[in-house]
Image (cartoon, rainbow, N blue to C red; front, side, top):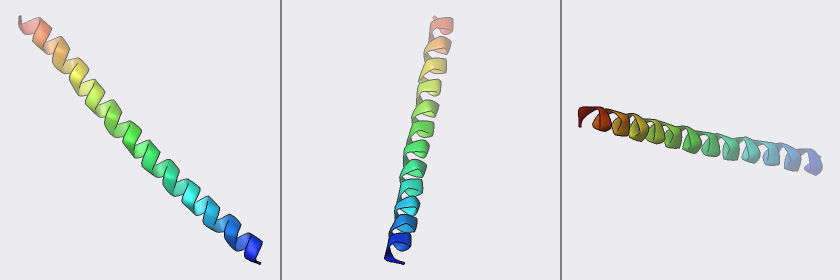
Length: 46
């Protein structure tokens, strides 16, 4: 019984960790995309 509980807890923690990493990667990608488009626009304006 204890083994099953530990396994479930571990899986939940793992999913939470994946969620955090995924959201961080997504927000970083958004920032990179904005910076990329911003640099493209600024080079076009010059």
